[in-house]
Length: 141
Ligand code: IDP
View 1 (tube, rainbow, N blue to C red):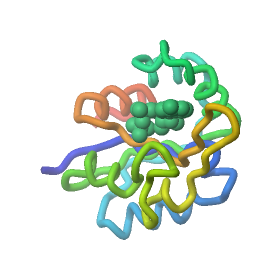
View 2: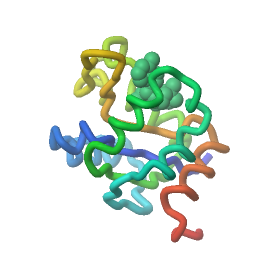
View 3: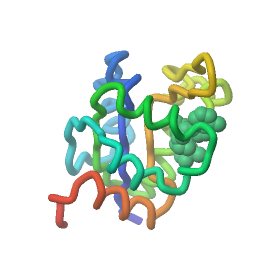
């Protein structure tokens, strides 16, 4: 089934100059890039994006991490892309993410409670729709 997901190259991915490599992996998998832009996320956008994590102890660190540098937001389309992009990303924790996945290859555990895991991907059709609207309000098809 053709669907869309929101992929984000997080600050550490941009700082490490992995944007091209990550786009290469998206394209190699046969997915289409529908829209792409650099965004300096602000607190309002991130609070809406990560609303379900607001009570977690790592939330302040997550906000700080996501605002420390502009990110690259990408709308990706393809067959079962929501699950497929998460497979390309690997597990949340870089220590557990398999080699060959983006997080396994480029993610870092960070001193303290922060996880620098390079990329984001929507986890369901509902969150994909919600997140694409949030990050690309100008995109209406
Ligand atoms: P996901 O990004 O793999 O979908 P979520 O559980 O939705 O994982 O968490 C969103 C983001 O919050 C993670 O990608 C990571 O940056 C951060 N995060 C999640 N769990 C932890 C944690 O235990 N410590 C620090 N950061 C975390």
